[in-house]
Image 1 (cartoon, one colour):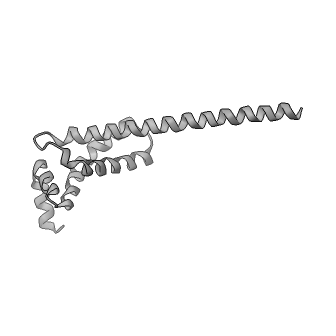
Image 2: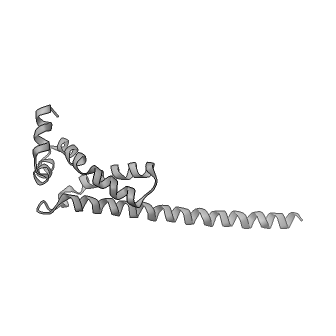
Image 3: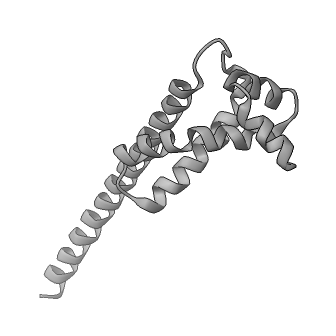
Length: 123
């Protein structure tokens, strides 16, 4: 993006930016990221206390928003829409982490049982 395009994009209303991104000016999505990344970061940080996962989730939120941009109603405010995507992303991450933790605990229980069985058998 040239400096004049960058300054012009910062002056555009969010709805106009979205319209132009939908029309193929995908480089303008960068301006949406600049505008809304602090909000998304606050949502994710408030729900998740893992810096690495937070950074990854913030990126995923914007990828998801871009992929679903056609479903966004331009008459509405973009902020609540993208924050909802962020909250849903964190919830999904936490569900997956919980399932992983439960599977890991079940595996640990099986190993512990087997070790106890082996100890009894060797007595």
